[in-house]
Figure 1 (cartoon, rainbow, N blue to C red):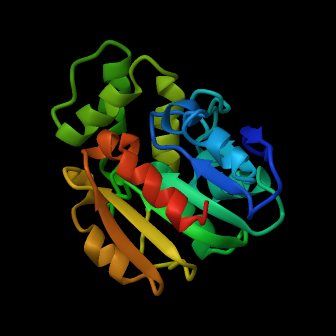
Figure 2 (cartoon, rainbow, N blue to C red):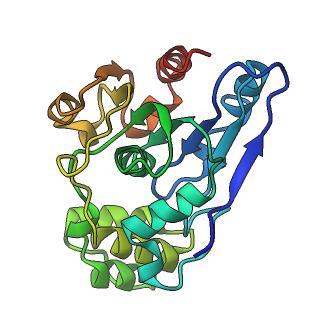
Length: 238
């Protein structure tokens, strides 16, 4: 099973800390969630190596032909195979946060510090009507279920078939925060107006070494906020 593609940026100054891994959200992209001028370049200037992961089915990532290749366990294995075999700092947003949680909890890689942004405590993919979503992206009617309609709308204009196979694969092993808990210093960031973060206080409470901080914005706006950016850099000692 192949590793996932990454965009690798080397430090431009003396090394000042472990590599930083950035994992994007669903129906987003590495370049979109983590613009180089905002993330990799200032991290490089501060002496930090960065790896921006490109998830399956997304821009820069491999197409998904087989659902079994993108179960949660297989995505985690492919993600880990893309990263250096050394201690690192791990930052994920939305779907990326869900994967980062499991990657740190299972200790597949050695994580020094963990940042979880835009994490949804629920498992949305298991509730998607995949037949209705696939029908819609191929010209059929809009799904009657609001969640399915939202997911189908998000994948439009992209490799919709790959993204829906990813949804199906991840749904086979739903996110369960209580099953595996990361035991590393963790910063949880949630948008003040993000409905997807409902219940994040309870999820943060199960982490043995975590703090929750709310930043301005909805699900997309929170990631773009200066407060989010500043909180990550401060937490990672940049």
